[in-house]
Image 1: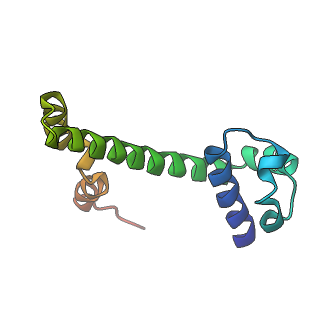
Image 2: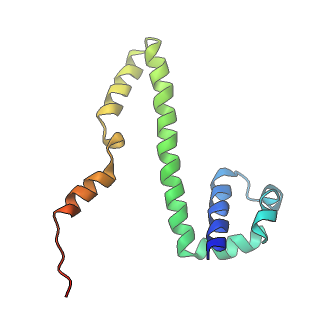
Amino acid sequence: MAKQSYKIDRFVEWYFNTPDKTEESFKPLAPTMGITLDTCLKNFKTKEQWIKVAKEYLNNSKDSEMLDIYLKMQEKAKQGDVKCADWCQKFFKSDFLVNKTDEVNDYLSGIEIEVD
């Protein structure tokens, strides 16, 4: 299962980072996968684990991309762009930087479940 999980992880990373989903673009990954692109496309995309890994990957990518945007806006703000400075202030006030896991843990910590 661990080997299958590794293959799915690698395939998801390749899938979302490669604009053209061709055998040619898959060639560098093929030796570590031990299967063809066609097999990956047919088998992995229907697995629940693929969906889970894909969602996790996209969520992580979204956060990374948002931080890249912030850094660019911050640089422009440092150069005197008032609109960018305003955007940076709003960004810091947004819930983007809030650790949602802590919120959920705080909420769940007050719940007691009896087990018979």
